[in-house]
Every structure is written in structure tokens, then in C-alpha cells.
Image 1 (spheres, chains in turn brown, purple):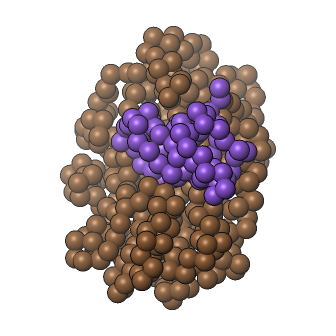
Image 2 (cartoon, each protein chain N blue to C red; image 1 turned 135 degrees about the horizontal axis):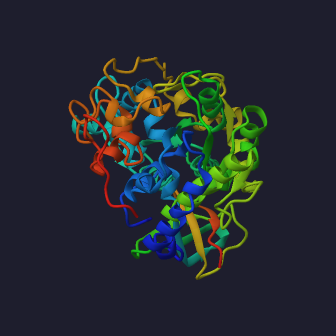
Length: 376
Length: 68
């Protein structure tokens, strides 16, 4: 809140944007991926694309955990929620994500006790207040959110809360980035790196991108001037032929992240061998489960879940949107069969989903270029 | 960002919040956001927090301090 006014200043943004054309070679195109859904949201909300020179294109990445969760996991959540005596807790955006037989919100309408929480700590409190019920927290999120789940599970174990458990859907950032970088469909020139994931894991884990793939990364904050400056830093690296990890979001991010968060995650979680991503398919070692030390709090074991793999809806092109191969408005069901009110794909559900952001900010003209809204 | 519609699971929901009560024995604090909304926050990832400090909070956990 201290910096919000300065970092949303339109005049400063235009001044910064005016320095960008000098960094761009005539006739060359630049594809920069913003990994994080939070950046996608800021880019649309503040009209940042309209400030960029010709040839610079932003590609929206897979960094929205709601958008990448496959239908089978939603079905699992509904399966647990329907059991007698269960209270299923989750973040609000999960409620509307469609599974193969409807959403959690629809399960709630049919009588399941599904409750929205703002934190795993809230879910644990519901468990202590309802000792006769089984309270399950449906955990999703990248490394930004995983520490919060880890601390709460530690707390549940220390307090011997027997009626609390967790379905762990946490994912990690490196494997999907590698999958994208290995994908022949996509030629990227650089990455706007996720600022709050890096707050937890540090900037160092992103060094494989310049080292192994020869692409620059700038770890960015989430205000419009943060994002613009990150684009400037990326273009400056490309202009100078440099290729490294830089931290734009220095007021929060360091090279090594938060050691206590990393320790808590290492204690509570273990890596899954396989995990299905919506639109991206199975990516090995890309997600977390509860470690054996925390098995008693693992809802998948407690409820003997038999996770089924459910194919993405055929008409949905979330996968191509998540990989940046097509723009949201190029999807065949965008804004017609698939809207935020009744989504087919998860990218239309979360406000940070690329499709919902396009739709919400009026960038959904289907024929030709999307419309633009007022810049910053 | 706290007063805007945003998704809690995405990292832009890491919101600056001010510490108004500290329960150090439990590793918790009560914080308020820019709109005055109160939330109990796990502060176990940070060195001891003090009243009046601004923390960056995500999903009920303080990830970092906002620089003074």
C-alpha cells in the first residue's frame, strides 16, 4: 500500500514506456512470457500491452494454479465433499471450476457442506470448532501458497487435531517452465518471473533458464510500473546480448528466498512422480503430496481416493492458451459457450486466468485484434 | 491489491497488512489490510514481528516484511 500510488502513476508509466522503442530492433519480434497469473491480471487491468512498441508481444503463461488444475482433481474434491459428515474447505475460486460432473458450487447446492476459506488456518479453525465433523482442506497453489499449507499442517499435528486433513494439489514452478521451454510449438525470448513464488524460493532456482535455455528472466513485482520496468530490463538484456536472472522486485525478493518456508515445505511435502496439468498433460515431478511423516493428515489416504484421470473438454483450448500458442480470444468457445458466469475451461474462472482477464477488461472482440482499454 | 477482486491462490493476492496484535507464543498476529479488514496471520516464517509493521501476507501467512 505504501508504493501503490507511485507504482501506478500514469505519467511515470508513459515516460518509462517511451524508453522502450530504443531497445527494440526494427523488424524483430519479441515474445515475452509472464509466468504468473497475477502479472496477467495487472497487464490487462492497466492496459500495459497498449504501451509496448510494435514487435513486443506478451505471452500469458501457466502460472494460475486454478487454471492448471485438471478436472479429475475437482471430481476428487466433490467425491470427498459428498461423504457424510465432511466439511470441504477451499479457496473461493476453486468453487466454480468445472469438473466432469459439475463444480463444487453445484455440489454445495445439492447439499454438500463446502465452505470457502481465505487461508488454511481458517480451515483448521473450522476443524477445531466442529470436532464431530471431518474437515478437509483442498490445497492448491504454487510455492507461494504451499508454505501456508505446510505451517497449518504442522500446527494441526502439534495440536493433535484429529478431524483435519488435506488434499494436496500444490505444484512447483520449475517443471512446467521446463515443459514449455522444451515445447517445439513455442519460441520465447524471455520471462517475466513470478515475484511472490521467488519471495519464497528465491531468484536462484530460475537460473536454469538462462544457463540451459539461453533466455533472460526478470523477477517482477505486480504493480503496473513493476511490470513495465521488468519488460524494459528484459529488452535491455536482449539488446545487449546478455542473458541472466535479474530481480526487479528487489524490495521483497532476494536470491535465496525464505529459508523457513523452504524448510517447512521440505518437512511436510514430498514430490509426486506424476501430476496431471490441465492442458499441459502429465508433467513428472511437478507437484507435491504430503510426506510420509504427515500421512495421517493426508485426505487422499484417509478417504482412500481413487483419483481418476478425466480428459479436458474437447471444445476447450485452455492448453493452447496456457502455453501461449493462441490468445484467449482465439479460442473457439471464448465469450460464447465459455464465459466467467458459465465457464467450460478453468482459464475463464479465476480472475487471473488469461481468458477471464481478457473478458473482464473488454478485450474480447472475436474478429481481428482485441480492443484496448485506457492505458495505466 | 487487497481491495481489488483478485484470486487468493495467485501471488498477486499477497497483500500488505499492518500488525495490530501479536500472539508470539502461538506464532500468530492479527493484521489489518488497507480497507481495515482483520485477519489472523501466521508469522512463523519471519523473525519476531512488532506492532505497526507492514507484512506481505498470502493465504493467511506472512511471506516477507514490506521495506520500511
